[in-house]
Amino acid sequence: MTCAAAQAGVLGWLAGETGGVNARRRDAAAAVEQLEWVLGRLRAQRSDWEDCLRHLSWAEEVRWVSDAARGYLRQVADMKARGSRVLDLVAEAEASLSAAVEQARAAEAEAIAEQQALQWAGKAVACG
Image (cartoon, rainbow, N blue to C red; front, top):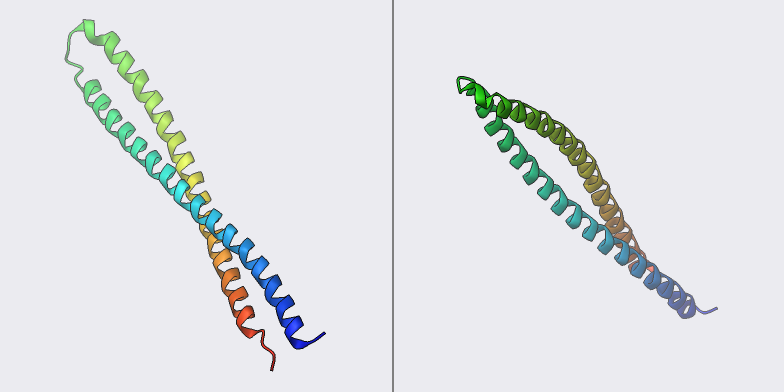
């Protein structure tokens, strides 16, 4: 086998590997983008729930209202309890999504490193 034939074989293999690495890199970048979008929406929802709970706390503090409002205040207390549970679930989901974003970023960084290694290997293949 001549040097040129060996070089062509190695460069062909590198081209195939580079295509796979590029696809993994694109997939990882897309995953990061999508997960960050979901995480942003989740954080916005958490903020909305926190605002709602602040308003419910204010309504609960207005205890000087008439006896007719006691049923309403019980409903407010129930809503606050449900809202607190939702916030706990949102916090758990946020932690999970943050971990998923970090994993996707690590996969993207790994694909970038592989891509660079393949580029350097391609440059190193030379007859001479």
